[in-house]
Length: 307
Ligand code: ATP
Image 1 (cartoon, helix red, strand yellow):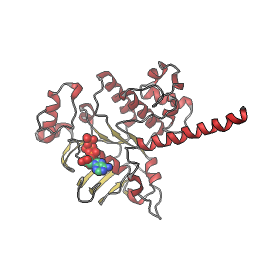
Image 2 (tube, rainbow, N blue to C red):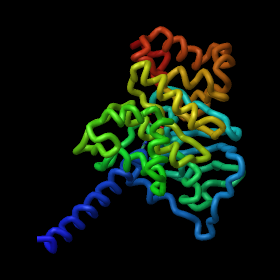
Image 3 (cartoon, rainbow, N blue to C red):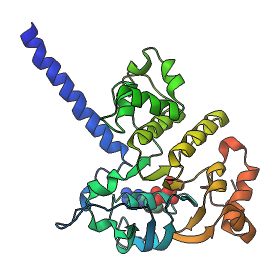
Image 4 (cartoon, protein in one colour):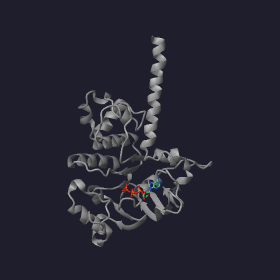
């Protein structure tokens, strides 16, 4: 029986590994199919990371020939700063984040990290410095401990728990039937949107990347969860160059710089107070959010369109 069982067990293990790998790929912004477009130069070297300055210089990009999604986008994120991207749905906010992670290469212009063109360095090297907290975090069919450890597979159990504490999800995990051993994912315990996002934050804390890309969830969270998430994010992002696609006001107010995207261009740029004083697109978006109940508030809506 043991002889028969061993290969079956082995098969089960590998089946789970392969399955996890698929979920993993899907989780990276659903970009599975397009990723092959990006190839490393034969001479590509490693990114020499120094302080974490990000420059977009006249970046133009389209997914489909003839339909430009970003036009002449230029901006700088100084080391350690937080930049918030806001604008109507479809204006190109997530695309900017995908380009910085190099899911695609730009059509013209360039993206620099510490003065080095990211299309000229090895993808693995680039990505080792960048952590992503996506809108929808996919959990693998494994226990919650391994789901967090995925941020850095060499992390010890203690490090996993410390990351969970920092991401404010440790107590929640202890309330699960088997604590850290609780199976999650499709066949296990279902986690709420806010809990999954905190898993993503815990993974990012373990990875401890130099640059953080955040695609905030559009879905409304209750205000306590929201505060918890903001607090844990503030810890992760402190002194790290951060780009955040912002859907909620709390992120925007404190950002060092806000970029307002409209039809693939930067329409306005500045700090919260400066943009309010300009009385333009941002001011209109802000006013609209102030008038909307908190649970429905999102900066994505076209300011001029009535609900
Ligand atoms: P949202 O706030 O709704 O997430 P966004 O501002 O982040 O929107 P993007 O996701 O950057 O917008 O998309 C910008 C445009 O590019 C949209 O018109 C979208 O339909 C298009 N687009 C996004 N991904 C692809 C893709 N893989 N192939 C073709 N077009 C795409």
